[in-house]
Length: 428
Image 1 (tube, helix red, strand yellow):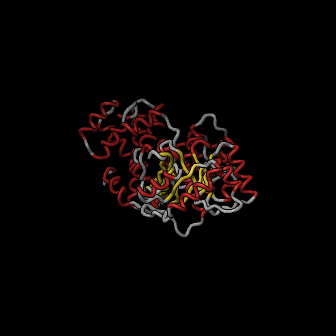
Image 2 (cartoon, one colour; image 1 turned 90 degrees about the horizontal axis):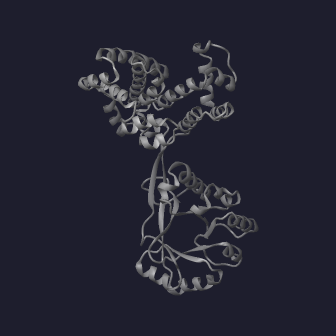
Image 3 (cartoon, one colour; image 1 turned 45 degrees about the horizontal axis):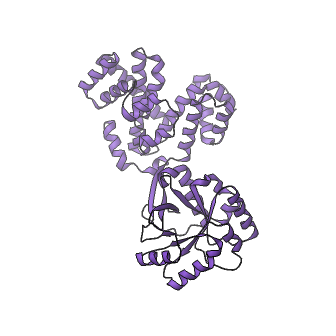
């Protein structure tokens, strides 16, 4: 099967779980002002693409997952487009100050209705306000003791579903002295919206406007994320050996593999038991190359299609490197190896290439070759891909472009196949 055919098959047949990749979900529901202009989005926990509710999960876990996905996986910009985000907070999240992960001007901290107005909670809300955050009270039901929280809140959310006009008006009258903005939630009809407007409600949310929209994102496994972080550190000339050592120490599996590399025959088969010593012995350049191969090979798991993709990626990498050497561009061998190796990374990880490369500190010329097939490495990548699919007319043109003959390319391809095959056998 050609690499292009394999890639297409992998997109539909290879399970994400086989490579440790998983999908994450956050729902967002828009909030509008009294003139029906978008004011903010509320971010809500979801565990699946079709699930528009959350069952059997603690409030703390929902808050944790939503914060992690909003900040680290999907990102705030794709979720909100620069609009305010309402983020639910439990008592524990408030008291531990985890809201500080967000920039104050980007969020409204929405204190859940289950949080009682205890002295510790009031003190934490005072600190939250001092730090420049906006406080909202969710599903508020007025009761004695809540005055200190109302004095600190800027927005109060009122559930108006099935409420009479008299009830809606009474809440507005009771809260007017606190100077808060009233947000009517669970608004399902234009009549309810207009009724709330008449009594001073200025923000609105509910099915009349929009059901929560689920935003999904394919996330890398922790192991893959660790490897990407290490690759970035190894590329950063300002990163100290200590930083790189600590990054390895955070992943026992990678530390073990590093020691195996350092103890291999290639480095004299010496007894190396220190991660720091291993790093100095192996060197950053060799480590970077080793990690790029490990990142690709770690996707193979026990899935046959993924394993074929890994083999194709390794062949591309080695062939591109050999072409660089044979055509007199020894200084470009490293980048060419990377271009060939990563050219199938989108199929392997089942993620858009743009999203993968955005996480990686690699040269712009490598990115240009992978994203737009442009720049100084594009001709070698075109040659590698043409050889792989057996397009001999294209091979001839591409070979001439880099100063090689078709017979030379064929010999290099055979060498690359042998090299890649040995590495794949080593994985098993």
